[in-house]
Image 1 (cartoon, rainbow, N blue to C red):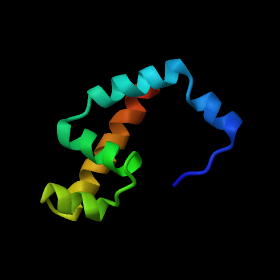
Image 2 (cartoon, rainbow, N blue to C red):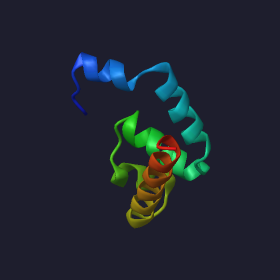
Image 3 (spheres, one colour):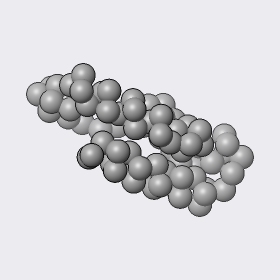
Length: 77
């Protein structure tokens, strides 16, 4: 899905950054967390996620955008 070189991945995947990400994920609602994990970890599209959750595609896009904003805000503190 996303290509990174090994050095860049090592810089991003430090224990401190992974702990921040885990903490940030805990701040999300269950629906937001499901969208983020399913999209980035399972590789599902937002359309597929909307079908799995039985909610509109537009609402999934809102959840995704809101979750990303929250994650960025939490991690950049």
